[in-house]
Length: 295
Image 1 (cartoon, rainbow, N blue to C red):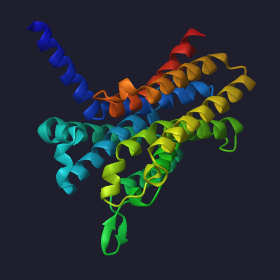
Image 2 (spheres, rainbow, N blue to C red):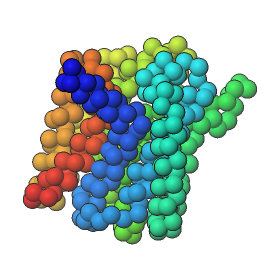
Image 3 (cartoon, rainbow, N blue to C red):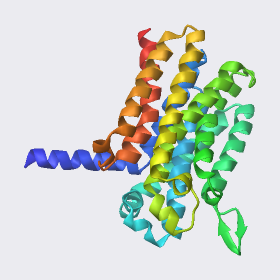
């Protein structure tokens, strides 16, 4: 009885951690710290790290709040039903993220805030109605085939450009450009499965996505291709730098991500998308930090 109760409590904690978006926010933080290490900046706790964490937490929960208020069938989804069933906790996390975000922006450099504002504007427009189409409000994510690329762009620029701007590095620096390309490919690879999962739902509402256009099988192949390109580009990048610990970290990250992308058994699990696939970003950041501390 005690063991069963313990298991239930653990599941509830994991569910709350994922559905509250604390998990995905830690992933963003980990990737940003990894950027510092990969660019040789170090691992100092600069204000932009807190901006990344709290902004991710706030934006994802804001998106969830809008979805719950606008879409009637949101309560049938576990990630949205958690917010509905735990209103006080959900509102508390939203307020916590907002306060944390405001406090961190006060401490941040102006040049960092300027770049972040441009990225944040795109993120807000992605989630919120921004114009009319046939007298009906629409979101940027509803523009055909754009959704995946906006997500990959926002994640790669946020977790890379803020550290770069803070240290006043040249944006035309080859290392920065390669890192942006690498991270874009990686995020794209693990985001495509989300559109594959939503294929039937997106089709029913008339949303045009890559899986609807080319089919499920070809979409999986594109995901694998993006991850392969990520592995090749990152290996060549850090091999030229003689940066062995990054090669090891990203190599392990690639293998683990390939395993979960291709595993039929794991695809059937409860938290495959919001736990495992999102967790691949957290894992990559953690691996870079781990191998850096070892080597």
